[in-house]
Length: 187
Length: 86
Image (tube, rainbow over all chains, first blue to last red; front, side, top):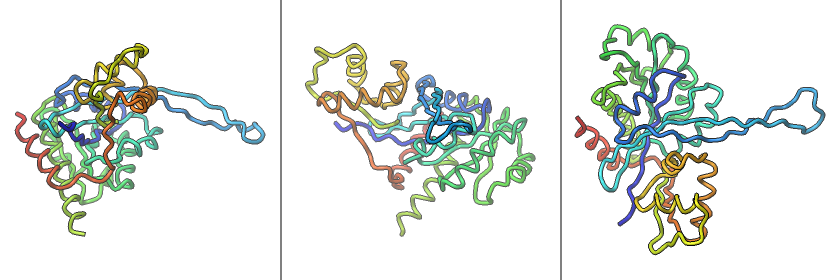
């Protein structure tokens, strides 16, 4: 019996916006954390020639899983929050369906790097404003304006604590992904 | 990181060091590299290396997929599956 096909959605956003809560609300397993060691090369200004100093740092990524059926599993990977690690997302997003960029209105500028990144990466994504009970209709336009989100990117509100709300947010991402897949198919 | 890993039929953990034994034990059911790393509390890089070793020895099957964007049918299945979650 062949193993299940994995698909993945990225849950992105700045530090502390609710990525883990989002993953945890819908994952059938408690969010697991995998740690990756990153080597950051730093150049000493006074060093002659190729004398690079290296520091390693450990980045933790939370992730979860939803089994669709025995042949299909949906993984949700939370990106490391720090903006300076956006370059490592290239690895993470390869083959991904899309991303949910989680926004906390009290810290709106934390998600600029993620939005920048996904626009350039050309991955279907949705901006999800994390709000209690998703009660933020009137603010969504302001968020869209403040973040300068392209018109074709959905900006929605959701409550990261509740499974139904997270599910609905992910369905918007999947809608975008389906659009993309259909366009690709017709070319 | 989501690549599925399974134990190769008939693979035996005999004469393997503890970490590799543990990986084989986990992969009785298909598991992603990320899950192996998280459950065994090993760094992702280290996990990849060990999985690679075990694959080279014929003890693990690593089911690599191409990185193509998923097709519409697959996405529809995910949509239907998610909608069924209450």
